[in-house]
Image 1 (cartoon, chains in turn brown, purple):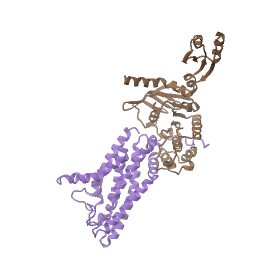
Image 2 (cartoon, rainbow over the protein chains, first blue to last red; image 1 turned 120 degrees about the vertical axis):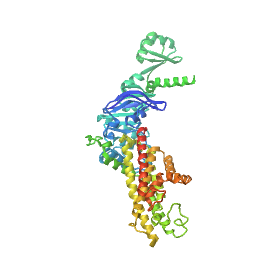
Image 3 (cartoon, rainbow over the protein chains, first blue to last red; image 1 turned 45 degrees about the horizontal axis):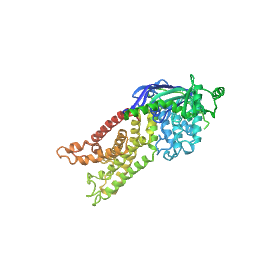
Image 4 (cartoon, rainbow over the protein chains, first blue to last red; image 1 turned 45 degrees about the vertical axis):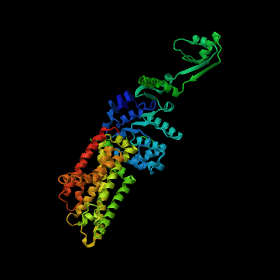
Length: 307
Length: 278
């Protein structure tokens, strides 16, 4: 379990994380979402004690990271695509960490196998592809058999095989009762893997909710209606809980009414419909909706600067 | 791939002070793997050793002529002292091992590997110390052996003019050459932790060890030597001399001065590395 309380991190006058309070619970995959620069990586670096918070606290299993008796055995992290010395072999990279963390050497072979790197374990990391480096990073994260796993953009640079591997792996780690925090800037990826979403925008918490709820609320679905009598149609459909928008003449976008309901009402009123199409919001649109406020804030700020 | 990720070793052993879980032994073992797994380590140590032996042989075999061991030799080489002649390569070896000290640290920074290590050891200072201990052990073992080889080869080439290891101060100078070269390696390591950049740390190292003494010679002779002998390189290299001059520290005193600098620099490195975001 990761408990983040009032976390703020500033680099100079740039605020990367702004008063973030959130708890990452065990037994499920928590997706950490946000546009690039939203503060996900910074938060993760603070969680594993690499960056010091400007304010606030982070606790893992109830302890501060520096107070953990064997950090690698409590928290495993993949933070950057490349974090092994290019001159070292994958096996030596893992061995030196295993010795440091007091992890038996058999774990080195176990995680190499788990990451599918056994065949190249003796090769120097400098010759690895981005995907192999990413797999080594995951192997490193799991070396200490940690109860908490933190992965920053783990699918970056992976081929479809690798992406599937990460999905299966994170699901299994969560099923084993571990705390799993996986970041991504792709909503579509998170929708597949994450049970729970924590969305950041400009360093602030935007959403902390189950994935299903987020998808339902954020995007919702709309119905695209084309009619030569669009004006009458708008009067007909207007009501509580109904949002109407007319992006062009003769076209109405309706939220809050099902397509069948719209069709029935139009038929009763004798209004001709030329198109009646239910539209599901894409996941990326849902994501854009979620972070819109934060992005608008940024635009406002830019305008203030210009004014 | 089907192996369960949950190993049998879930029991969390938490004795009073076992940094990072592996304890002091684990830290040292880990840093030993870190140092030995890089080819650079062995290339540099091999090169330094070869330089020490070959230069010693060059200086001793040309001592009688006008070669580098004779009149045209490097300044500071005591032509009358067969021990100094045979250990004349220690300056170049120090330069090379100093660079190794830098590279072993800055390489971890440029590759990002240091972050993984610091995540494993959030107190960070045990990593600096363990790395220094391993570098000192490996460096001393290699360079002291190389100094011994340089001494034996050099004395053999001097024939009757050669001295034995049991001669006054000879054994100390041989061990001293290893100690001095290792000390400069540690100086490079401390600068690496402090500056993180390869270029900056190597530049600073060369400035301190090789440039400052030259500049110091431009100082007035009334007090200049008193300043110069306090420089880390000058102080440390007095252990390599059999007989030290009036402007130099006594051998072990000089080495102690170098060690003093190392303690101060490593203390500064520990404070800096702990405070900095990794």
